[in-house]
Length: 159
Image 1 (tube, helix red, strand yellow):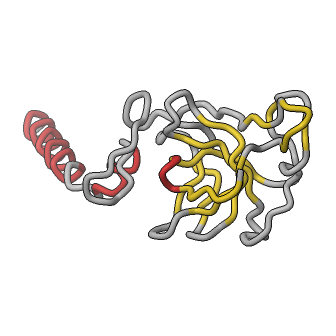
Image 2 (cartoon, helix red, strand yellow):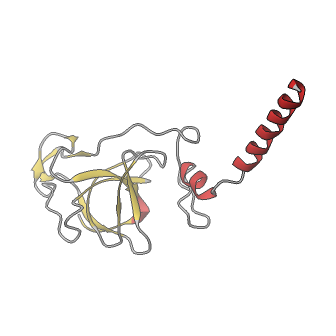
Image 3 (cartoon, helix red, strand yellow):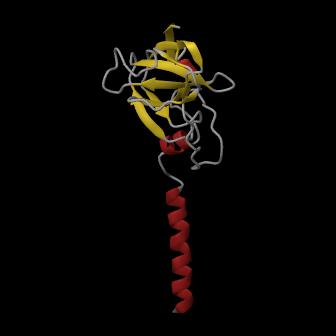
């Protein structure tokens, strides 16, 4: 009887493992950096399920120029996830719809990601304190939100 129960339990575990293999691929795709569009893969770091540490968006550094170098809008097409670091595995900070205004303040070394500042409540004209000079380069700490988006998702038109 004991052998029968052990064998039944082992078969049940094998069956559960087979059922787990039939999970929603969108969850796996997102964890691995696929943005959902055919052929679009975003680079992530670390293993599946790991989360990149947050990276602050830096602004300022020029006493005679705006704290953020340019202004743009989220490109037409689809909503964009703003992340806490320049990495597809980083935590989501917000989702911005096409046309939402953003200040472009920072970028990664490869110009693949932009560090942006935005006001979730004012998509047309954010007033986040990025249009005036800040002499010392530092992490953005103003009244608006900041985070990272793929550079291709921003259409810059000023700066």
